[in-house]
Each structure stands twice: as structure tokens, then as C-alpha cells.
Image (tube, rainbow, N blue to C red):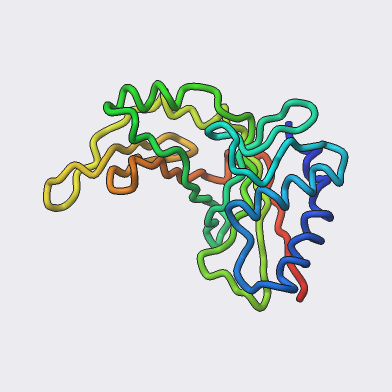
Length: 195
């Protein structure tokens, strides 16, 4: 469904190579948004991204065709079977029902993750460009249960689905964290950077 966006890989690799000619740290957060936007524009997809941080919640940029993209960093396991990403902060919604109602809304069409392994090697940088159809992360349809800590305190909520599991952590502004299993990846492409 999103295969045409594989075409940005050469430009993305070029930009990440330039990044690593200057910096040892991986490209993440806003830098990933900009690398993605400039690569989309260069390859003819267009992007409305601006360096203002003012996009609506969940959407970091929109292509000329109207595709709503959420850019995520993320950590991928060594065997490439699971991607961990952070998501919405849901503090403003007080109950799990309100949080799930918010999560049921269509915020973006696709997640483009630029993931790394936990043990990122700055001498041989490697990234993974991963696309995930956001509709398949149907949080609101899952059975959420209280997440109780060892000492009996309420830490938030969690769910386990067939192709992902997630939790909302109270200690982190009720932020959503998701483990997405490789079966949900539309594609995963390694990007090796030669420095």
C-alpha cells in the first residue's frame, strides 16, 4: 500500500550520510521529520512540513496527495521482530474510556519510523526505515487492563493484541508506548551509512 515511498531511500541515505559527516548521534525526533520531508520533496511526493513544530497532534507532515505521516524514531530488536515507539500523551483524558475514545480517532494514515538498534554503533550507523498502516493499530478495540506494580500501585493500563501490545504509563504523562511486531510492517528497509 505504501511501497511507492520506498523511492525516498536513496535521498534519505544521502541526507543521513551528510548528518553523520557532522554528528555521531543518530538522527531522531525533529531531525527525522526534516530528513523525511526533504526526501519526500526531492522525490516528488511533496510535504507541508515546516520547522515550527506546529502540526496537529499525531501528524508531522502531509504529502501533496494528502497522505498524513507521523514520524517516529523507535528501537528495533536485533532480530527485527519488534519495534518499540512512543505515542500520544493522554493526560488530558482522565479515564481509560476517554483515552481509548481519543485513540480511536483517525490522527494519521501511516507511521514512518526511522528506527535503530538499542546499541547504536556511531562508527557504523545503521537505520531501518519502517512503514506501518496506522489503521492496523486499533487500540480502541483491544481489552485494556490495569497495570499494577509490584508494590500494588496503579501504573497505568496495558493491552495485548495479536500483532502489537501497548501500555499507557501514568508516570510519563499517560504516554502511549507500543511494541509493534514485524507482521504489521508494510516494509522494513535497512539503511547503512558509510562514514
